[in-house]
Length: 310
Length: 111
Image 1: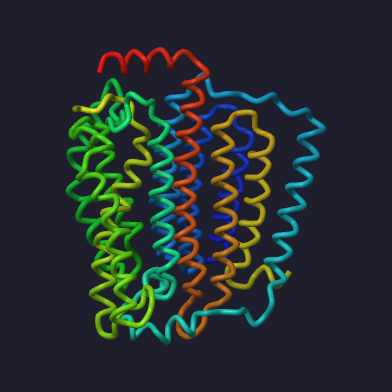
Image 2: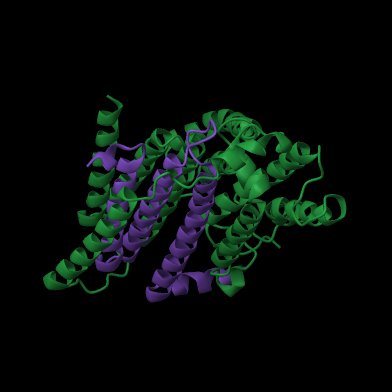
């Protein structure tokens, strides 16, 4: 029975990917990607990875689709079209892509047995961190350096996006609200955020012991903020606003401070003193959640499109 | 054939196929926005292969190896950031290619 479900999921994922490849209309392809992201979340549940499933649905499905749909609306009718490839060229590319897929598929089916795994090591040290969710332990304790660098990458991407604003608008607010706000959007933007904020905080809080965590929580909070900005209930902030900059920098900054304090109190960069691991991790997660929410919302909002208020 | 029925292997094969389909979109599609969509499909495929590897590595009471899973979570966030940057670049490119330049200059003089 579950095998049937798996096969149906895989068939749908492949069908939606092919739809993206052959569909002429841009919007239809993006909506197919949204459905693809949601089904991919189910696939992650079947792979025993609920944490990844939440991230995939929130960021890979929802976030990316909002980003692309907004871009489609802005670019409609004037997206740059490269010259169409010849039929022979396409066939050659298709053959090469099929070869890559076949090679990768062969590699997946002939992986060494028994499978190499770090699961015993991860679960052994779990008690020392005071956490119950091994994925959170990997993200914020064993491989905290990856998470720290990833936060920096997100901020760098935001710097890249912001730097695309014309000179005169630097530091101004992005343009999020459409010229006409449909009534259902306005209604949803009033009704959903109270629930969304509670769900976001809950996801952050249970992340230590159950599926959830900073990225998932941050994305939900970012979505609520974007919804309110899109409906015009709250103005998009000036990108130069100090409060916004502090929210963006707070998480990585606190992470770095605690990382360096590790030299003094725990004998190494990013080491947590014994007995204090859990409170420190929760503090970092709280600050990171706010930073992730602000950064993701601003990434979707785009560069400044209005002159700064001053 | 029995290898296909190991836990996660089916999704690993699906991931491999998605990499090929996504790559085809990236290389052949004439629209630049669709190429960004294609990049996302390639990413999803690679993550699924990771997921299949993680699922095989289940041990010590865990159903799957948490290390590749954490890497995938990091990867999804980074892929989103890259998409956002690509979209912003694409929008700016199209602004510079069409008449919108006048619009932004107007805004500037109005401030």
